[in-house]
Amino acid sequence: MLTTVIFLLILLSAVTIHELAHYINAKSVGLPVRTFSVGVGPVLLRRIWHNTEWRLSLFPIGGYVDLPGMAPTSDDQGKLQHPTNGMAIKSLPEKLWVLSGGVIANFFLGVILICIVIIISPSYRQITANVIPFETGALISSVLPESAADSFGLKPLDTIISINNISNPNRDIVVREIQNSNKLDFLLLREGATVNLSLPWPPNDSRATPVLGVHLAPLTIEHTRIGTFEAIGEAFWFSVKLLPKMVHGFAKGLATTLTGKRSDEIAGPVGIISLVNQAAQIGLAPVLFLAAVINLSLAIFNLFPIPGLDGGRMLLATVTSLRGKPFRPGQEETIHFFGVFAVLALIVLITLNEISGLFNP
Image 1 (cartoon, rainbow, N blue to C red):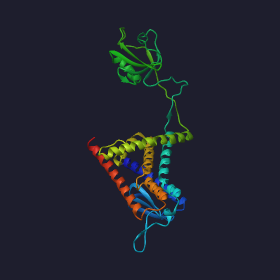
Image 2 (cartoon, rainbow, N blue to C red):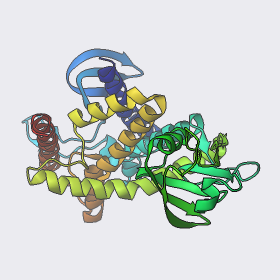
Image 3 (cartoon, one colour):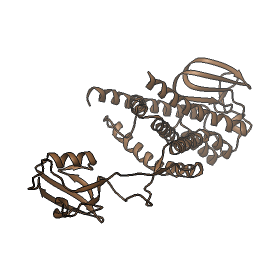
Image 4 (cartoon, rainbow, N blue to C red):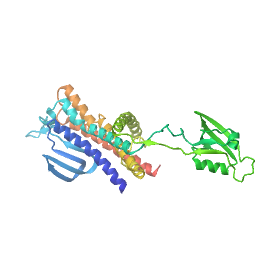
């Protein structure tokens, strides 16, 4: 239940900020907004405020703002005519400003969420002052003179990368292997190079409990929290570098999905809910990071020049401007209809593949 609530909150916040940006940009160029809807389908709640009907609709998979001049009108005989007001008479830069608002908002919401994640999560950095440098594994801080370790060639500041094929052992694992093994196989990191040592064990002495003769240092990590301004910069550049990877992943996942196979690069509702559940079990930071990725994904997806999406509408607005004349009445709406149909069909296909994967992992 909690997973579903978190999923809906993430989705509704992404949709709301997207449509709100369209609304604000439309108002900024003098366009009235007739309807603002979060969700699509049957209307659950509605209210008139500032000459706009605000709606909450049943399915939170999208939303819309209804602007004048977006669709053809009918004359007295019912014949379609070109719109003569609203968006239809705005300049191309104004149209692109209105249409790109949602994409811009989702991108910057993603940046803000990543910034919050960076601020609330300690940034772990190795501090050289008063901290023994280390990579991974257990660190030998000292070796007792004339001990078994000394005779076998172990040295201070050796890092035990593995012991008896156990990688990155902590102090307890090293002690356990020393006490219970018949042979000790070390993989050490020494001055940047790896060293293999195989030691006969236990040594021939009279002690009931064999002693290797090393001291293992506790590995201390000092951490600092990144400041707000530094976090903003890191979040912005992280998001920018993430975008091309997401585009590549989406294209690869789309190609895989269209062949009828399940793709790990694209997540539908089932996959996103599963990711939300995993993130929620870890903590707040992973949930916020997932919300950031969803917002960035929404921004990228809407930029694709697919009819019905913001990118498709921007492309057609640009083509109309270059042609110097509008499409025939109803022609653009038909193009957008098939685009939306294709997107919904893709979502259904992804969801079916995910459901199939639950039963045939």
